[in-house]
Amino acid sequence: MWQAEHVRAALQQYYPACDVSILGMTTRGDQILDRTLSKVGGKGLFVKELEVAMAEGRADLAVHSLKDVPMELPDGFTLTAVMTREDARDALVSAQFASLDEMPPGTVVGTSSLRREAALRSRYPHLVIKPLRGNLDTRLGKLDRGDYGAIILAAAGLKRLGLGDRIRALIGPEASLPAAGQGALGIEIRADRPELAAWLAPLNDTPSALAVLAERAVSRRLGGSCQVPLGAHARWHGDDLQIDAFVAMPDGSRNVRAHAMARVASVEQAEQLGSAVAGDLLGQGAGEILAELEAAAASAHGTDHGGGSDPAPA
Image (cartoon, rainbow, N blue to C red; front, side, top):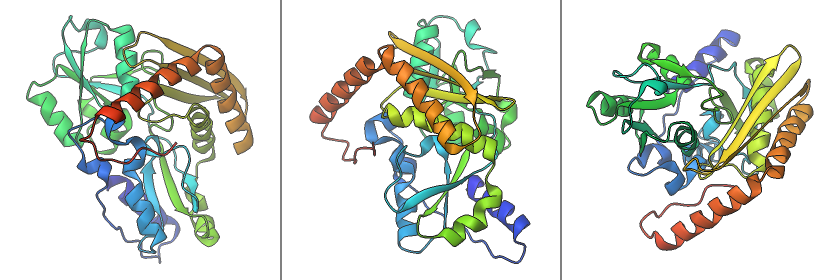
């Protein structure tokens, strides 16, 4: 809702005479809170209902946190704008500890992300990593009750909701590489609405959009989903875009990492840069990791009859 209200406020600045209303919806990703996203269908769970509303004409546009959006949109839909990005880093939230480095063996750390889990297990094998689901208030409540010694959340969500003071430490990309699109808001519309795309164009922030599209190109080539511990983060150095990416096993036992930097001035160049980094990862053995993860996921789906959820889009 914060994201929708943020976009409404931005639109009303550009078009004061326009009435912008919000159609509140609860997605399956919001409803299923007792299992990790990697086990119940992944990123698509947060967007499908919104796309149905647009297809039926009940909504003109949908606002997404881009880290939750599948790399391939369904036919008939397009990502038309990426707004100025908030902090893309992960954040440590804890009343007991000021950093991951000072946590003693056995400290319980909560996270909903296989990507964060893999990074933590690789760098801090003495910590106990446990799943954490629910909205932000629910997650913070579990921490405050003592269920966890610390939790890891996206810094952007905390800052947007005025909870930046709960951040004990920001975790740099070298320790926890962000998810593709983390901290960025994207606006999705039907592809047959060019007049709407033109209307929304002032909300697009080109540097943020190019960085996010490079990251999403990495994930797209590698088939990224919530079942794959994958991070991709792009940063600007003048006119040059630097991108770092990794793929890992969830237990942190194996990971491959790559980076590249190039002059980027177009969507095509951004996506080429992301694809090149993905190619580097594949050359280092990412394909073998992905094959193992796919086999493990297939085995789990074959034995788990209680999920009942659709698979995530590729």
